[in-house]
Length: 101
Image 1: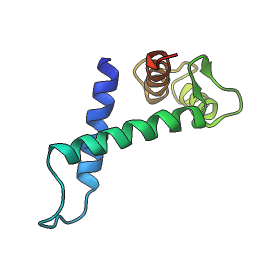
Image 2 (image 1 turned 90 degrees about the vertical axis):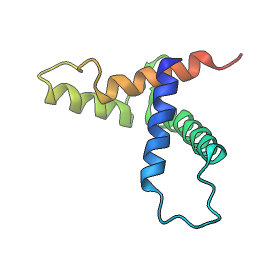
Image 3 (image 1 turned 135 degrees about the horizontal axis):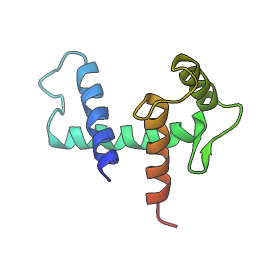
């Protein structure tokens, strides 16, 4: 649950910093924030399996497998805990195990 909250906050911060100029009619309040967080979380839930981050592990011959290989080569043979690949795999696990059957 904590990882979901952190990822949603990070999505909000990313979307908030990427926003262009604001107009008087822009929805930058609480509802706008919730909308961005829901869209970001939904996109992440769809993007992780597409990249190869599955609930059963990293899919062979996927972008995730290539990222894991590059990370292992860069770190002397092991994927570091807390690194990008480990974080994305953890997010994939938390998304899929929290979905209702």
